[in-house]
Length: 271
Image (cartoon, rainbow, N blue to C red):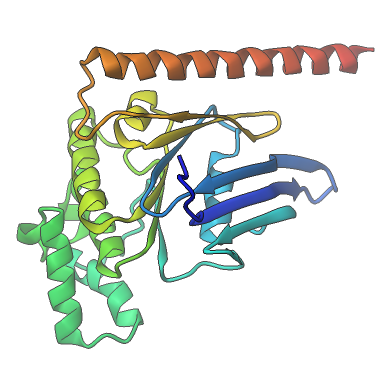
């Protein structure tokens, strides 16, 4: 996959352990290695508790590894950066601001002149087909429209990396499919590196250049599947079903491994 390319994002034996107030520890992500390349669309899938959100938070700089390192462009990720934007499931919009003002917010924070910020924000809204909704407030928008505003706000500042933590999970199926296509179109035009967390295996196959299968107890990178299909992809084709079966097979291996691990723990605890 790398073809001699230098990684954009790298995990180097990166791990994350959380500690409770009583001193108990929980390893959310074991020492893992992973490379993501510039312009790549990488999906992270796995069961709850496998460290998907921990991994993406480490890349975004919201968390620091307790061991190893996470690098972007060869430098350790120490904090969030304006070139790397996160989009969450809950949109994160300011309810008192219009769609346009929400998109302009990040531009204003960067000190961009009002007239230029408005022009850029309107162009970003146009890219997600929301020009007509620019003056509406979040409570006047559907869930899909809110997520479009969040995406437009991210695109307005022209990030090099876009982190998306289950951004479409709360949307209805039709809106979700439509936003998947819009995201792919935007990615193609802007060549953004995208890290996308999802529980939906079909979504991962439809979007990703590669799919990282994660396992829990402890959280870890278990397998990587390269999806060698041209865009746009057709979910009804046999070639798509091939990757669906391949991904389900990987998931079954993860599930069986976790079940054996759980049974071993139960036996050990009973001795």
